[in-house]
Length: 113
Image 1: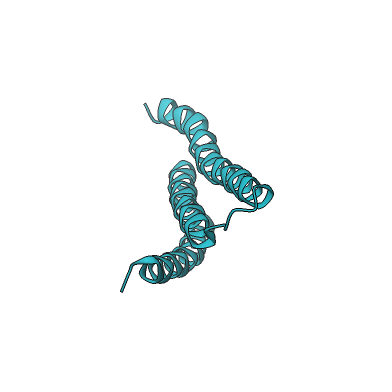
Image 2 (image 1 turned 120 degrees about the horizontal axis):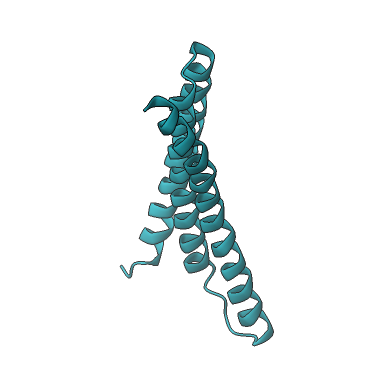
């Protein structure tokens, strides 16, 4: 049973990591396209809206990466792995908090007074 779970997680972890990366990459590409279209049409670019969507995607992508790290540690829970996971989660949590703070600030600036 344990070996089957280990094999399943061996396939799931890269899939979860790829999903997180895909979320970020697709939104980066979408943001670039929307920015360039607005630039060449000489339309005013709504930078805040682009930044908010990109930021939301980055937050979601980071959540997938944290999930993959947790699953990876479930495969081989040595003390070094647990400490590395704690450091990674701590770093990503701080990054996630800062991104969400920036998003709240951008969204508050967009709301009419």
